[in-house]
Amino acid sequence: MLGVIGTVFFSISYSQSTLLQKVSSVKQNRDIMVYASENNPVVWEYDSLRLIKFDECGTIQWQNQYNFTRLNRILLVSSFAPLSKKEFGFVTTETHSTHSDSRVTLIDSNGNISWSRSFHMTGYSLISYSLIENKQGELFVYGSLNPIGAGSVSTFLYKLNRNGHLQWMKSYNLGGIWGGGISTSDNGFLLRTGLRFIKLNFTGTVQWATNISDLGNYFFSAPIELADGYVFNGTNSGSSLSLSFFKIDKSGNLATIHKKTINYNSINRSIAKKNDSTFTCILNGSLSRNLPTLVEFDKDLSIKKKNTLTLSSSVQRLTGSGVAFLKNGNPIVTGVIDSSFTHKPYFGVLDNDYKLGCDTSIQDSMFTETVTQSFPTVNATNQPLPQIIDSSYSQQSLTNTLETLCQTNIFSLDLGKDTALCPNSEITLSNQSSSLFQQFLWSTGATTPTLTVNHPGSYVLTATNICHGISVSDTIQIDTIDFPSPWNLYRDTVLCENSSLLIEAEIPLATYKWHDNSTNSSWVATRPGNYFVDISLNGCSKRFYYKVESCETLFIPNVFSPNKDGVNDSFKVRYLGVYPYSIRIYNRWGNVIFTSNDPNENWDGTYMNKEVSEGVYFYVIEIGTNAYRGNISVFR
Image (tube, rainbow, N blue to C red; front, side, top):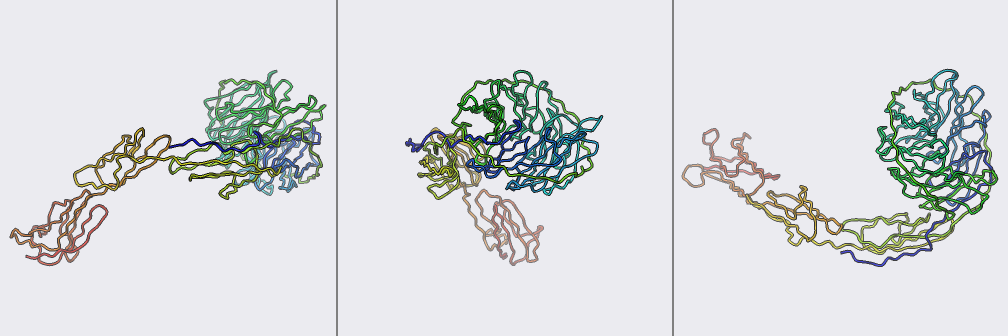
């Protein structure tokens, strides 16, 4: 049984190494987002096309600004995406006097432009929303196709290879203003424009489309995909600027919870997926929207945890605009610091509870609303490929510095309480605190963040934060729960013909599930075989096996004399058992002259009502899966 063991726990404090740093550059406006490339944070300034890459300790690795000769910077719109192979990409909408073009740029892992191409389509403006990468590393651009002059607005999707060459372009007769697209887990796409959605397969063929009816909202950002559906959001218009979250399932139908609204006065343009069942937003609470609040939601759009960031300075006010998650699960944030309207970017690393060390709390409430939907018919049209009109670009290296505004260098390590394992089970050990570590050493010699164990013992983890050179340790004791055997246990028992066997597996206070799903403490066997029962007791379950064999008796004579003298006149096989029985007797030419499935039926030495001649005959007897072969001599 489980014993009570004192927990061994070493901790310096309750928080991890967190930081908030101000970047010395001045932004042109407030559009800025943060992304994760493996465990490297990157901050992208949408309006100025500036990209800063940090290492996992928050130090700038490189920072660049990208420039293009045909760019109209006043009306610039861009969308950024971290790609596979540690590359990056972005699309920009280049607005000219009569039209807009779509530019795609690929950046290598060192921040240098690999290629950049501007595409033009005669008679149309191309408004780019999203750069999308699928599982094969192919690139796609989603946006709005606007005819110059009269005509209906539609959406477009065009495909490029990794070298920037166009493969195909399709348009869809469901247009709108602003949106975003994603690659889905089935290797298709979900395109959003406002509250209209188009689901495509990997070739761009329409699978379904839906339109959500919800007036008075602003909708900007791309949706995210959870295990059971897609989540998206929108800001409600009016003085309150509250934020609403919506959900549809994988077939495009509204989920049970159509819409939930949180009463923060906030404009938000992105959702960060944490895992297949949770996501996070960064909202800006209060009327002045200068209290960045991280809110984590579950798949049912209910709040799991939240925290609000603040600075002690009354001059410097934070505005949040982006949140993402590193590969190790830690959240990173970005936005701007408004100090006399200089709009300087900031970058922050938070703990797993979204805490910084400079935190506050604001009140919130959520309420559920019902919305309606319709299912428009959407057609896909193959379009001619846009023309490449410009491949020129330039870039410059920046020299911005960082100023740390808030930092906590206090660490803790917690493997959890000592515990005991059920028989034949295992447990995965890992750090349960919020602290961030990069190096791990277990007492077993393993160097992974987690350790799966199935044996009792004492396990020690030493974890190191390499950014600060600090190591902490914790120990956990794992015991094994003793599981009793049934008090009346029979194994390898014998079952004879026309009988039954009661298998008893009773353990006081236990529950049972036999191989046939019956739940009694005993089971009656009427045939030989291998049987089992799962017994549950005190939260543990163990399987017990029972082998029931047949009490076999088999005698095969090798001679008989069918001369009707009353002595040994027939070939009698004596078999006592419960397995299926059959016999075949052959003459010397291989012809079957006698068959039977009854062990009590004898051969009288005749074939077709005539006596067979003296000599040797052959038999094959099959009992269950066993076969017996031999010969029998006939004398008269």
